[in-house]
Picture: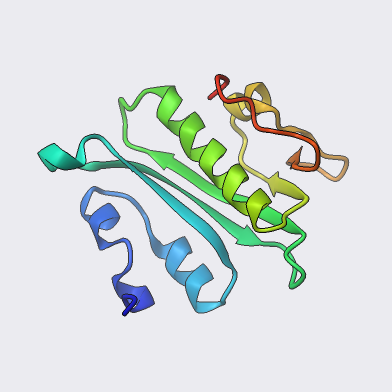
Length: 135
């Protein structure tokens, strides 16, 4: 049985990360995916980052990368891996593009491009996120 929305991500909150957006998206039935990274589960090391995406529309043709958060000192590769996992997950669920308002130069290196109306966009059609370019 799944946890109630209010209890999901408590492990991230204990590691000092904000899970309120994820809880709100769950309550609104708009959460597309919530990817989490940890340093070493076998050694019970803390969670080091997470990324959240929501559906832009009811048809789920577009997703929004809402949050990418990592703990201070975590290598940029972890942030890139989180973005890669989000893009891949929503693309597999049918998203034709991923949009974001996150202002992070690493997203450009990853493949996001400036969108006409502002923000960034990543087209998932005929595009595979570059595996070695984790901003």
